Length: 196
Image (cartoon, rainbow, N blue to C red; front, side, top):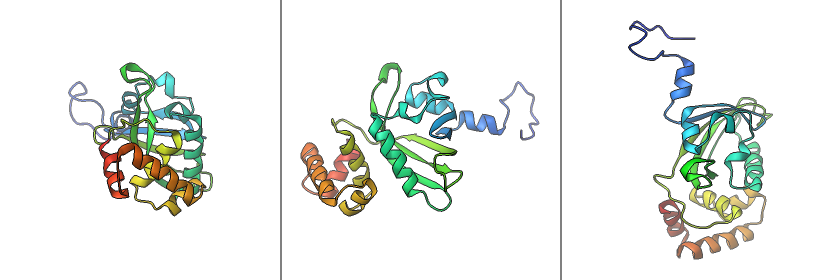
């Protein structure tokens, strides 16, 4: 439904919901069964993709690996709140253009329209965090997941529960991350991960 526009049509673009979606200053995606039904211009620019490369395709094209796509889907299904809301920071992959294949930190938030069927239909917002959080390290897929959860401030026990691995395994990965970034403590690890 378009809002009333009192100015001449050539003076400014229409102010309606489609325009708001298309030109929003954050990436927006509508999905069904983890397939992209529609996305806005910001998403296309963020991932360096054309509409044809995204619309009608699985979210998997935006992940570094198939395993990360699958595990993220499992986490979303397990962690929705009662209204279907979910949010996290994760590492995603640009598709094409000068930065094709580049991995970057992305904040994803949104909601499943039916919390009892998390992937049935959803509305998702994507925010590129790369201007604030650089990814300069070579990390394995599991290290990327654990790094994201360490940044959230979760303990090894909570990370293990979320990823369905033992807290001891989380500690092993945390120690690897600390060696890779040269951190002596978890707060220092978080600071170095945030700084890139």
